[in-house]
Image (spheres, rainbow, N blue to C red):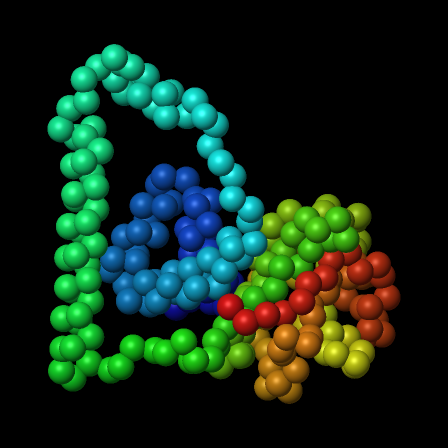
Length: 238
């Protein structure tokens, strides 16, 4: 029987799998779970939906001009070597066009197959919400994904700051024009899954924000932040 802690660790493994943080053995183990267990495949799919939008915020980086020549050199392809069949630009263009045509045919067959539900439209509302909880200098300390339907919030560390002994980090929901609402205490360098009561789920949305404060061990004694707020971030639809 899995405990809550076991489930949290599984959630984090799937997040690390999507982020590419696992070593080869751990990644292979998760890949087997995805192939054999529908629950694991669904969990990884949810993480991809939650985390992929964060990559949109990253600026594009052009590779160095010498990168291609370095690849050719390591593969033993001299600059004067005559291009073979698999280096033919015309061949790859032909294969690309062919693959696109095949994909288009498969898409048409899939969409026209009787008995299948209609694909979602662009107006389908997003269910999941995300927040990048960052320091004042813009560096992300944690990322949060929220599933209002299931009443869950999953917090994953990015680059959290170390805490002094006897201090804890506490997560807060800050609705627009209202005082902060305590979500819960969590280990700064570890992820945690929070169960959200319906009253708190109803306060989520683009006008609200998440924040993290440093509190005495066990959390704020007053029900409001008493220590410094070290990171905050707006909530948006994924």
